[in-house]
Image (cartoon, rainbow, N blue to C red; front, top):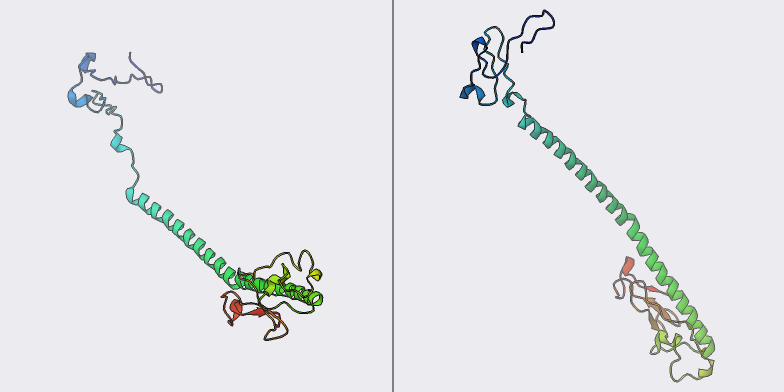
Length: 206
């Protein structure tokens, strides 16, 4: 069937595979059918060959690599910023939080020692003497043997239990003490006599 151009009503050339001169059907050659090409035999009309796949533009590998490098660069910068922020936060914690924690632990030790000293004073009022060094602070929880007036010892003792210092060590007791009638003290974080800062001894004399 012949097709016409709608603008000037002129017949269009046939564009079919294997249509030769005079309208006779001719089979397409191997060169024409390879790649699914279709050619027109007219000398005046260009071939109706569909564009090959090679004509489709492909992405530039070097351009894609450049874009990937930029994206990776942004990711690296963001990672470095996060590390910097974490470092600053760690510094703030070391400078501000840790000293405050040390002060809180020292204050707790002073509070415990004050309560133990009050219990020792009540013991002295009832027993007319301080607990001996050998009996130690345990005399505040359980009546030691050989009390001159055991009937005056309260059934529940003077405290329910002996506290440990903030570093998990027992408080020390001496009677008579080096600094007064009795010494009640903690050896600090290092558990040894002397020291500075959190390792300093904390006693009822200071």
